[in-house]
Image (tube, rainbow, N blue to C red):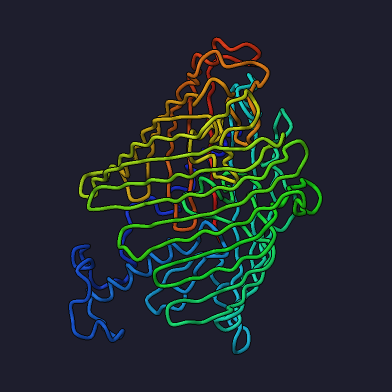
Length: 502
């Protein structure tokens, strides 16, 4: 894997310059404050006035700014927050900050920035959309540039450019890998109502969508191209509730021409989040997806919710929903999905281990390959049901266990194990794009196999990360016994990814 080795060598050379060693006080510092003192908060009467110069208060302010710097870039870049640049306690520097929080006139504030990402991919026996027996080594590049212009506190314009490319591949790129020079976001926001308990905003234009766990609606950051929509949205941001009501059309990626919305598809709905209970989040959603594109003509309604919470060292997550509507043939559609997880974190132990046990279920159909199973809409499939992206959330069940540890402040390790099997032998497995696998042949077994995912995330700086991942799929009895499959063995996946926000 010459590409992977060259990328790894480059990253290793960057480690010392990126500050892999433990953080040290800046040159000329006159005192050191322990973490215990910082956690205790203000220790003098002047702390609340904002002009306290005592060591503990200065250290607390510096810690808060450091946290804001690390969290400045959000999963959706239009939610980035660079307000820390206006904090007198901030005395660091990162490339690109000169072009952020720039005042224009009396009322405008502008942020300019972006991201560069490069990922080396080695796929063995699954180049394509499933187990194919094909191998490939290739390099993915992605550049994003954004401009965010705010007028006072009631209006803004946001635009984001994307260029995604694939090099050195032996097989044609997937649809999610190439999109040369296009617009990812282009919209305006205006505040329609300013109340005592919240604000109502209106958004119009091309926009990415991300909700909840991203099991149903996600910009799909793993993809080199990301996913976006075109339409409008009303969103309420209140003290106890956030509520979004959106009406959009998915944007179809054209690798070399300007992307356009798919006028044969409608995607609209409402997503609400209740956040008044400390340590807990409640989501309720109602989503409609009407698809008249090609042979996949259907209208699906998805209703459901999610409960995410923590109490002391215990963590939990429950999400599920029912789906109904009409299929291509005019027959009624009935399906559902559910995910339950329980976790425990040892925050006071060495390496801070955290363990999760999940069970995923998504219904299958009654007729082989008829599309009766659950449709997962527009998810972040890569995060769930295996990093190799072999299966979509339809006609599948999976007990899975995740363990994360942090042996160093700049290093996080993850291991995730899945056992995957069909919900019913009356239907076929589905890929991440909801296409049936081997629909002409009935499954000889429900046993799909096992997957193990290993991931190391190295934080080089607050703006740079390096990811090293390896996955292996152990094929099960479905592949050994079912006729008509192109490949029956195991598969391997290795990748190394570097990204830099600026």
